[in-house]
Amino acid sequence: MSINLYPSSSASNPSQVTPNNESIYALPPYMQVSRGLVSGASLVNIYGYQGALPNSGGATFYPVWENATAYAYPGSAITMYLWSSSGSDTAVQVLVSGLDASYNLQSETVTLNGTTHVATTNTYLRINGLSITGTVNAVGTINIGPSSTTTTVQYAEITAGFGKSQMMIYTVPNGYTFYLTRSNAYSSLNGNTAGNYSYYRVWTQTNTGLIQVLLQAPFTGAYETLRVAPRAYPQKTDIQWQVAGNPASSTFEVGIGVEGILISNSAS
Image (cartoon, rainbow, N blue to C red; front, side, top):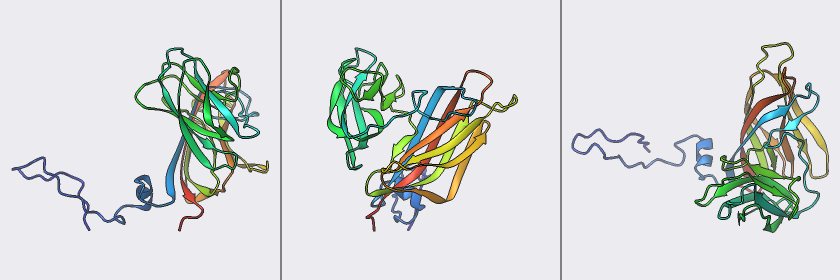
């Protein structure tokens, strides 16, 4: 077993690369998951950003996503509609990633028609994210919601120029368990004045409606945790990574990133 990471230094052929005949056991297990070599397991990275989260005096928590508001889930699996804020986005392809009425994984690609609402083929109980695919970038902001006309209710958004949604809102698919390994939160509130800090918390909801706050902590600047034993979130669990703030100004900026492994419950 050998791992060759660098080109050969042979003077006669400096571009020659020694063949890599590594064993699948040569690298750490998480690396093999990232490479797609572990059956029934996949890497999940979730990132969110909000540039103007309201000052609630630390009293009101918001999930970190494109809208500085609370998040309302669909009450049942419904047809979704996608639209852009720009009429020129008529050839942009958007990958919709979500869950069906039974929380099973499903996805599809929708081609936008500018500001006109385009219906999905599938019905969705949860939306876990949007991303632009294909070869055409979007000019405007892309949204997905429950109506062919209304733009006020949204379940995900892609800010113009970002290419994918930035939402700390995730639901564990049916038949899987999500093992959280790392979480990081960053805030523009750095504690340079009295009371100028943020609060971080993890909010969950089961498919029967039971709500729990698993973690809550104040922080200034950055909050980071690396779990020795990953935290397991069961199938059909809604998870929101939320922040509240007590800034000297009216709004503040916050970003969160989490990483974990999604493992099939039937994986051997």
